[in-house]
Image 1 (cartoon, rainbow, N blue to C red):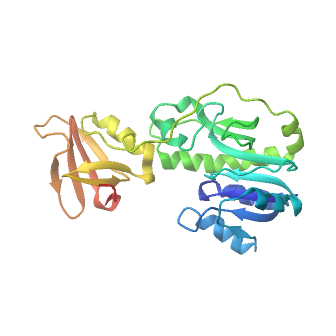
Image 2 (cartoon, rainbow, N blue to C red; image 1 turned 90 degrees about the vertical axis):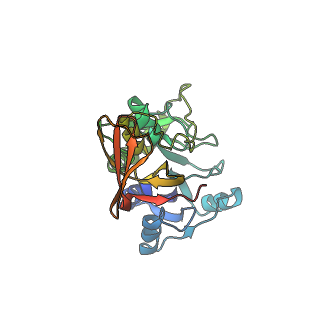
Image 3 (cartoon, rainbow, N blue to C red; image 1 turned 45 degrees about the vertical axis):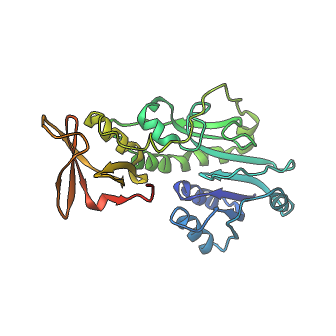
Length: 275
């Protein structure tokens, strides 16, 4: 079967599944050439697959079906994909247990306050984001110290097996798909939600840092906005003001919290372009 693939690196594991199953790639749409598409581009280059960086339009997708493409597959792709009326299969991967957690940035929400909805859903791709009939899904547990990166890794590990199960009986899963219920939509993360509030307890600051991991969490330090990707902390009583720099040397910054301190390695912090 011919396939058109739409995706970024976080779920590039799906590419190898289609290759093992004997699918033929007519094209791979990856949106941009950059740090989030390196694996996708390397795969396409290695296997001599056409790469597309522009947003797909109706004319382009109709050309794909005219070439014999029967399946569109989307995995971590941010743009809306037009679905031709004659396309046989269209599938998207979403990292929650739909119908809960529709939206573009569910992973931080899962770690912050929605852990019971953690999972992977393969569903029909429609013109309404994350709303198509459910084909197959699997729950994922969130550990007490889970962070954005460890949760991303879990999804990366578990998705290929779920996709293999789906492809083993694609027509059967398609025919027996389940309508989504009302569910919930989780809005995109705001800068405020992605920022450290020095007036919060230390454990809440650490939770926020874990929720964003390598994406980075904004922190105002000495009048400047930084992006922090990792830190350690301890709690104790002190007389510093929350957010005050307690120690700075060539290796780390130590910032007072209301009930302790946060130690940030300088290798894990950078100046933000946001003023």
